[in-house]
Each structure stands twice: as C-alpha cells, then as structure tokens.
Image (tube, rainbow, N blue to C red; front, top):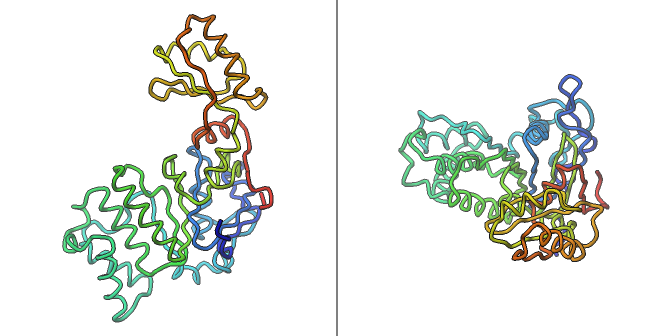
Amino acid sequence: MTAPGPVVVETRGLTRLFGSKAAVDGVDLDVHRGEIFGFLGPNGSGKSTLLRMLLGLLLPSAGTARLLGLEVPRDVERLRAAVGYMTQRFSLYEDLTVFENLDFAAQIFGVAGPRRRRRVEAVLAESNLEPYRLLRAAMLSGGWKQRLALAASTIHEPELLVLDEPTAGVDPQSRRDFWAKLFALAASGTTVLVSTHYMDEAVRCHRICMLRDGQRAALGPPRELARALEGRVIDVHCERVSEVIDALRSAPHVASLTQLGATAHALLARSAPSAADVARTLRGFLDSHGHREAVVEPSRANLEDVFVALLLGERLDVEPGRPR
C-alpha cells in the first residue's frame, strides 16, 4: 500500500451553527495530497456546509481548518489561486461560448499572458471540448456542461479541487468519463474533495467520510468500511421476494431489508450472532412461513449497507489512529 502524502486539508472540531442547530458538529479530518476524498451522507447531513467552510464561503462557529498550510478563513484570499471549485448546478456563463468561458475563467484565476492561451487550448484538447469551442454553453448537454465546468475549475492547475455533488443528473457514461479525469488529476498530485449521493461514485474514492446529523460517523477506504460489517449480511434467494421481505420484517436479528432483483438482502443487527448462525435460524423461520424454496446464505456487505448502518445510529470509523 502506498504511503499517504503530506496532509493538505486538516480540520479540528470544525463546527457551524445555524441558530441552535449544528449543521456541522465538531468534525476532525486529515486529507492527504493526491487523494480523492469523498463525503457521503443523506440530505441535510452537513456535506455542502462543510465544503463551503473549507472554501471560506461560510465562517465556522467553532474549530479550525487549514488548507495547503494556510488557515481558513483568515488566508482565504491567498488560497484562491490554488483551489478549484465546482458546484452542483452549472454556474458558468451560458451566453458565452465554450472558449470564452474557459478564457474568462483563466483570467479570473490570474492565468496571464501567453500562458493563458496555452492553458485554454490545452484544456480544450484534454477535455475533448475542441469541437465545441465556438458553441454557446447553453447549447451543451448536461454531460458536456459538466465537462466544461470541470475544465474551467482546473484551468489554473489548482493543488486542491472541491466538487459539490458534481454529477447530479448526468448520464452514467458521462459520470465514468468525469471520474477518469479525476483519477488522472489525483495521479498528477491534485487533491480532490467530492461530495456525492451515488454509492457507485463513493466507492471510487480513496477514502470517504460519512456524515450523519453534521457529525463524522464513518471514515476510511470504502472497502474497509464494508469489511467492518463482515458477518452481518444475509441474502435470501427466492421466487416470491416481496412476500419473503414482508415475512422477514418480523424475523429475529434483521435490522434492514432491501430487494436486489430476485434476492432479499438483509443487514443484521449489531447484537446478532454470526451470519451463518442467523442464516440457519432464518431458514427455519421462512419454512414456517411457507417459503421452503428460499435459499438463505451469508453474503458480503456493500457500501449501501454501511450507509444504512449509519442511519440506524452506528459508527464505523476504521481508522482509530486518526482524529475524530
């Protein structure tokens, strides 16, 4: 495993209050250079508020944040040239062409002289936007608008890139292309902070922080977080899945249920015995409810199981040596 790079984002006790409500509540984080670090959580969990504090767009009510060795919000003006930001909604100028948007973004970020023209041309080529250079941004599809927004946010070659739910409403192929670009940026040393609602995106991150009610409820590589639920997942393969799910709602040790095709996927309670033991119990339970054809077996947890466990009140940090 590659050793982590230097810490480029550090928060300690970072808190933001809106009245008496804590939107972000005492969050501690270390993010390393070249890392794609994801924030995952339900609506209202504090993801966007946390990112906006890191960018200096919101003042923290308590705690500290340092980006690239500089203190936020005190040094936010010095950080602007080193940070790129892409919002969920397309925020460029729809009446300008693709080229004009990129050229304007370069000017805003202080890319001057011949270097500005070189960067605009390079980004047009790297993002496959060259055929659309004279097209007004309003005429682009959602996926191409997203590509243009990412190009504009990286025109100045930032050390840190902050993305707030950047692929909402974008088709799967465009999302795949978008993530390929993120991995290329990370490989070159850019640190990426990204919030997302998509499990298939969160699992691509090197590490993720899951937030619940503004608090850090899980931290670690996605695969290791899922491994923390080892022995707590059951799959039931059957013909009458909806009936089996209805029956299992009253079964012992079952905390949550969902349907995956012809399979009922169950997360077990923290107090449950091993999945193998529960599988035997559920086999008898389903027999007594007329589902003798069902096949019950232990299964592997996925990131959605982790998400559900957090909503049920669990905490799954798998990096005990790191601050909470």
